[in-house]
Length: 106
Image (cartoon, rainbow, N blue to C red):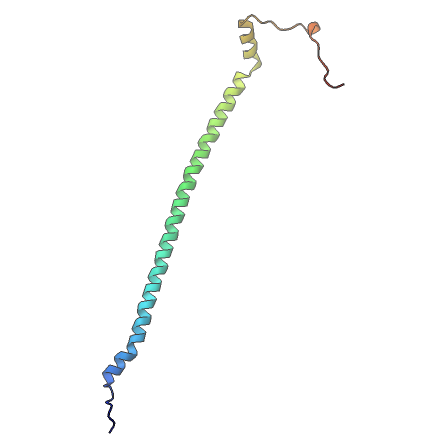
């Protein structure tokens, strides 16, 4: 007989099952971490999409403002309006024969 007693079969089965349990727990933790990563990426994408939507709306508003300002500028620069403002201030159109041009290119 040997001096060391052999472990009971139930103890051997429990010892062999421990690495499987550890692997299972490790797999569950890894899957959980991957799910957290997927959620974090989705939240980041949602934030970017919200910002993109806000910027798109702002761009549309700015384009509408530019169109309104362009229209206003066009009406302010209209020849008829300028002539009427000039006449209201006492200005008269120059006669065609009194107009001279200076040639700056020698």
